[in-house]
Length: 147
Image (cartoon, rainbow, N blue to C red; front, top):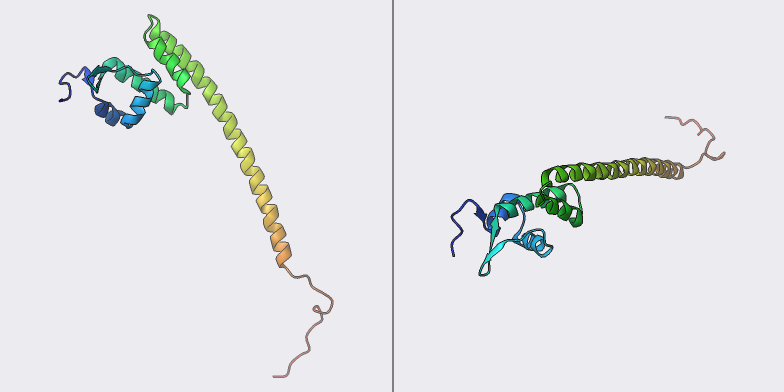
Protein backbone atom coordinates (compact mmCIF):
# COMPACT_ATOMS: atom_id res chain seq x y z
CA UNK A 1 0.00 0.00 0.00
CA UNK A 2 1.07 3.56 -0.55
CA UNK A 3 1.26 6.23 2.12
CA UNK A 4 -1.86 8.34 2.65
CA UNK A 5 -1.91 11.39 0.41
CA UNK A 6 -3.63 13.58 3.01
CA UNK A 7 -1.46 15.88 5.12
CA UNK A 8 -3.82 15.04 7.98
CA UNK A 9 -2.37 11.54 8.33
CA UNK A 10 1.14 10.25 8.79
CA UNK A 11 2.94 6.94 8.56
CA UNK A 12 5.07 5.52 11.34
CA UNK A 13 8.21 6.23 9.28
CA UNK A 14 7.19 9.85 8.61
CA UNK A 15 6.66 10.61 12.30
CA UNK A 16 9.70 8.61 13.30
CA UNK A 17 11.84 10.64 10.94
CA UNK A 18 10.29 13.95 12.03
CA UNK A 19 10.86 13.27 15.72
CA UNK A 20 14.09 11.31 15.39
CA UNK A 21 12.80 8.11 16.96
CA UNK A 22 12.49 4.53 15.80
CA UNK A 23 9.34 2.71 14.81
CA UNK A 24 10.02 0.44 17.78
CA UNK A 25 9.87 3.44 20.14
CA UNK A 26 6.59 4.54 18.58
CA UNK A 27 5.13 1.06 19.03
CA UNK A 28 6.30 1.15 22.66
CA UNK A 29 4.43 4.43 23.21
CA UNK A 30 1.41 2.86 21.53
CA UNK A 31 1.64 -0.17 23.84
CA UNK A 32 1.70 2.21 26.81
CA UNK A 33 -1.47 3.92 25.56
CA UNK A 34 0.22 7.21 24.72
CA UNK A 35 -0.49 6.91 20.98
CA UNK A 36 -3.58 5.41 19.34
CA UNK A 37 -3.11 5.21 15.58
CA UNK A 38 -5.83 3.96 13.27
CA UNK A 39 -5.10 0.79 11.36
CA UNK A 40 -5.41 -0.18 7.76
CA UNK A 41 -4.60 -3.89 7.93
CA UNK A 42 -1.16 -4.10 9.55
CA UNK A 43 -0.37 -0.49 8.71
CA UNK A 44 -0.57 2.23 11.36
CA UNK A 45 -2.09 5.54 10.30
CA UNK A 46 -1.36 8.45 12.62
CA UNK A 47 -3.61 11.52 12.80
CA UNK A 48 -2.70 15.11 13.62
CA UNK A 49 -3.86 14.39 17.18
CA UNK A 50 -1.43 11.44 17.32
CA UNK A 51 1.31 13.72 16.05
CA UNK A 52 0.51 16.24 18.80
CA UNK A 53 0.51 13.47 21.39
CA UNK A 54 3.89 12.27 20.14
CA UNK A 55 5.18 15.83 20.36
CA UNK A 56 4.01 15.94 24.00
CA UNK A 57 5.66 12.57 24.68
CA UNK A 58 8.96 13.76 23.23
CA UNK A 59 8.82 17.03 25.16
CA UNK A 60 8.13 15.14 28.38
CA UNK A 61 11.01 12.77 27.72
CA UNK A 62 13.38 15.70 27.11
CA UNK A 63 12.29 17.14 30.46
CA UNK A 64 13.02 13.81 32.13
CA UNK A 65 9.41 13.06 33.02
CA UNK A 66 8.24 9.52 33.67
CA UNK A 67 5.58 8.12 31.37
CA UNK A 68 2.79 8.54 33.94
CA UNK A 69 3.37 12.31 34.05
CA UNK A 70 3.44 12.44 30.25
CA UNK A 71 0.19 10.49 30.19
CA UNK A 72 -1.39 13.01 32.59
CA UNK A 73 -0.55 15.85 30.18
CA UNK A 74 -1.88 13.90 27.21
CA UNK A 75 -5.08 13.05 29.08
CA UNK A 76 -5.60 16.77 29.79
CA UNK A 77 -5.24 17.46 26.08
CA UNK A 78 -8.62 15.86 25.43
CA UNK A 79 -10.57 17.83 28.09
CA UNK A 80 -12.40 21.15 27.66
CA UNK A 81 -9.91 22.88 29.97
CA UNK A 82 -7.06 21.06 28.24
CA UNK A 83 -4.60 23.80 27.42
CA UNK A 84 -4.96 25.69 30.72
CA UNK A 85 -4.66 22.47 32.75
CA UNK A 86 -1.72 21.32 30.65
CA UNK A 87 0.10 24.60 31.13
CA UNK A 88 -0.49 24.66 34.89
CA UNK A 89 0.57 21.03 35.25
CA UNK A 90 3.60 21.58 33.04
CA UNK A 91 4.72 24.60 35.07
CA UNK A 92 4.33 22.62 38.31
CA UNK A 93 6.28 19.64 36.97
CA UNK A 94 9.02 21.85 35.51
CA UNK A 95 9.42 23.56 38.86
CA UNK A 96 9.68 20.20 40.65
CA UNK A 97 12.12 18.83 38.08
CA UNK A 98 14.25 21.98 38.19
CA UNK A 99 14.54 21.73 41.98
CA UNK A 100 15.58 18.06 41.73
CA UNK A 101 18.17 18.93 39.08
CA UNK A 102 19.52 21.85 41.11
CA UNK A 103 19.88 19.56 44.14
CA UNK A 104 21.66 16.98 41.98
CA UNK A 105 23.93 19.74 40.68
CA UNK A 106 24.78 20.80 44.25
CA UNK A 107 25.43 17.16 45.18
CA UNK A 108 27.70 16.69 42.15
CA UNK A 109 29.63 19.90 42.91
CA UNK A 110 30.11 18.75 46.52
CA UNK A 111 31.29 15.32 45.36
CA UNK A 112 33.73 16.88 42.90
CA UNK A 113 35.19 19.10 45.64
CA UNK A 114 35.56 16.08 47.92
CA UNK A 115 37.20 14.07 45.15
CA UNK A 116 39.61 16.88 44.36
CA UNK A 117 40.59 17.20 48.02
CA UNK A 118 41.11 13.45 48.45
CA UNK A 119 43.05 13.22 45.18
CA UNK A 120 45.34 16.06 46.30
CA UNK A 121 45.96 14.35 49.64
CA UNK A 122 46.81 11.13 47.83
CA UNK A 123 49.18 12.92 45.44
CA UNK A 124 50.87 14.71 48.34
CA UNK A 125 51.34 11.41 50.17
CA UNK A 126 52.72 9.76 47.02
CA UNK A 127 55.18 12.63 46.65
CA UNK A 128 56.23 12.25 50.29
CA UNK A 129 56.76 8.51 49.82
CA UNK A 130 58.88 9.03 46.70
CA UNK A 131 61.27 11.48 48.38
CA UNK A 132 64.07 9.66 50.17
CA UNK A 133 64.83 11.21 53.53
CA UNK A 134 68.30 12.62 54.17
CA UNK A 135 70.20 10.48 56.60
CA UNK A 136 73.19 11.78 58.59
CA UNK A 137 75.59 9.60 56.56
CA UNK A 138 74.36 10.93 53.27
CA UNK A 139 74.38 14.52 54.44
CA UNK A 140 78.20 14.63 54.84
CA UNK A 141 79.95 16.71 52.23
CA UNK A 142 81.92 14.74 49.69
CA UNK A 143 85.69 15.21 49.72
CA UNK A 144 87.08 17.58 47.12
CA UNK A 145 88.45 15.93 44.01
CA UNK A 146 91.58 16.90 42.20
CA UNK A 147 91.13 17.42 38.57
